[in-house]
Image 1 (cartoon, one colour):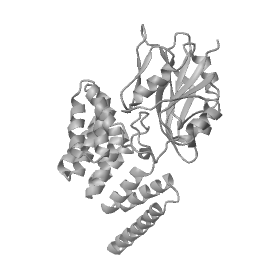
Image 2 (cartoon, one colour; image 1 turned 120 degrees about the vertical axis):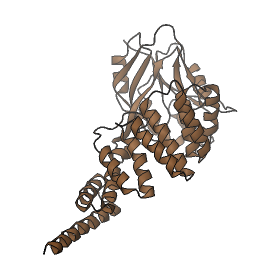
Image 3 (tube, one colour; image 1 turned 30 degrees about the vertical axis):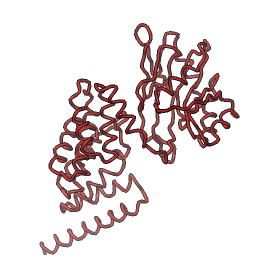
Image 4 (tube, helix red, strand yellow; image 1 turned 90 degrees about the vertical axis):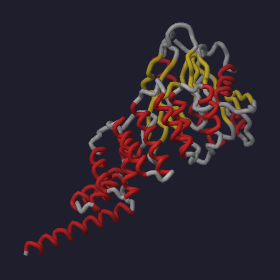
Length: 371
């Protein structure tokens, strides 16, 4: 069965992404873009490559209103809607995979989303997204970090779309200035939405509003819906970081330890504690929790995953701590493992050399003592 599949998006001043995005979306029957006030050549380039573009500005700005307007511009004859941003690229062959798996009763499709990739194109942060959906029965909600809400009749029928992959190539110079006021608005509209409150508290921390971050994140932990251990742990870690920002090391330590206890099988909670220990030169704490973190075999698959947790970080911090504790053979082992995770790094190469010299010195001293 053939489906009428359209891609839709909102954008503003994203001409540098247009070519790769349109090439990626070319498997669709049509592409619709709601431009929200571009002053560069985004609109002209999109139209030149065959996209249907509608222009509309918003005051005040909200992401959900713009996305809902874009969705409403799609024809009623559209079967499947694919929502993406212009800095995202679908891996070729996505349409055939979508048509093969979609059923007439399906409402929504989940797929793999590579939020970040390394220089070789390998994913460093991967989780699921669910922005492929039927034409009717959905609205976008929340002024920022907007999400699709199902409004259809009967139970929602969703499925995981095997093989469909969306890659993200973010614009790292874009400002986050609008996020905080929009998150404050979103939390005011949805005070019981635990994820919105968590995101607001985190944004307060990013903006150095430590008191607001602590108050908001403690409130998040009290919400009935805040049950997911990994997110609760992240909330506790941001409370700890906020206390560090205020210079309260005692409270920071307590919250970092709570974060580890809340999610003991994710390395992210350990990384915050280890960095705290490094900052205050508590080498025993750093060493112990690096060793514990390295026992965790698999990375998190959630949006909270931090790529460095399975890179060189724990080996690096652990080697430094072992060196300060006089555990020179262990410092050398960990330093070499850190370098293997990040070959060519001059600092890590120097750490290996220091550890080699320290091990040799210990052997000489042991020989002198026995001689």
